[in-house]
Length: 186
Image (cartoon, rainbow, N blue to C red; front, side, top):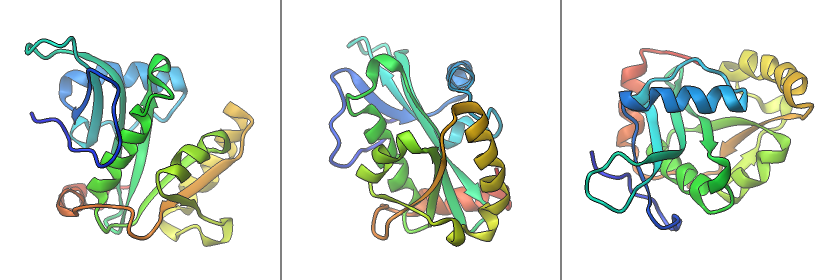
């Protein structure tokens, strides 16, 4: 598999992005459980992985971050499950993952939910907060449940965000996600 292209975001030395694969599932689960995120809908094919390589050509580096794009009923996509290892935070790994995943969405509306303390990262990457009265119907149930869970788990406000117009890139992968989803949500 080839590394995933990233626009205008520098990665730390020896960190590259690549498509997710089945062998990454244990790393996904460890990170998701550690960060108290939703452990459902973990299809490795939807993930982009940040991997620290050893500098050799043998591959098999250490997963230091990941995120995924999930279909939302065929009409939109969700950037989800973004996790960066603590030792790599603040070095551009999260931003690189966000930009790569956003490019995969193309012109398809791309949403995410996050806690208030994380919203500035996404704003720097082109996302805007969606007002509560503007939550799309296909996200309403998830958003309402998320409001309660975010408060119970983190004592923070849940924020729904959407990628601002013109924030994506080529839409071929987004179209494939919509076709593969069969209307899946969540």
